Length: 388
Image (cartoon, rainbow, N blue to C red; front, side):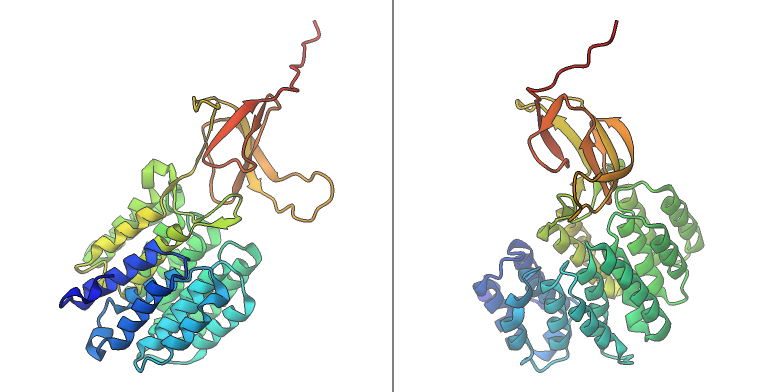
């Protein structure tokens, strides 16, 4: 809030705005929103042309993360700014507001933005591409349709749009190294355009974050040999390898939890900071502000399931872990997982998996088996007596 206390550089102002967005993520706070918009209106053209001004806009977007139409008033205020950044800010704000909603009309609007053939001043198109990934994340049907749209964008659009596609693919499949997505990113990582290939490498890290996926590890090793003369590419490969082996494979970046029902705002915010800094790698991560990578810490979470007693002492229990199945609206008691394996806790659960108790001996206090779960003895349990 003390942005006006003295002469500050636009870099400091931008990162202060971003920090406010991360602190008040999804809170729609009027004071914070007002001060960010006011500072944007007062800024000179030179300040708004600064390479980090987009983080100021992202701070405003995070303030309205997932709040849908509550961002309308702010959108109107943004459109009054007479600078190309107003287009960019409006799209960042709109896509953040509809993040994870799967709103088809907003996806169409974003595709419409990408249809213009611009080679200059196309930052808003890059934001729109990432917005498509952001709006459709966490919902399977929309995500599949978005993948198809990204294919079209790669075929028919100009360079700025193509550069954002790998990042959107990464944001759509965080910690979920899907075969076809990794395949697509692997092709893009050998693109002659340096920015597309660097973004694809970072996106591979984002897709495989904390999974120790051997296929991605092999691809990244090949890339580090392929680009051994290019310092920027080697840096990106190292970052991607660090994400892949995060926490020795015990962590995840996935912002969607509780059986893929709830999105963590701060985790999604941390991922977005990385994604938006990749829109201009030369002046962010490959330059002086490489510390923006540390925003990912907001998204890092353990992905193991640990069962404990009521006094929080560890208690091993057999659980079944398998692919989660959608059971909404089905009659009776449908199976919630398929192709399961039986393990004893603690056990790792990946992005699209779900766990259920494999024994009637205990009852879990929470309905969702994720993270640390308290279990109690089942009072009605009768051990099956062996027929002697």
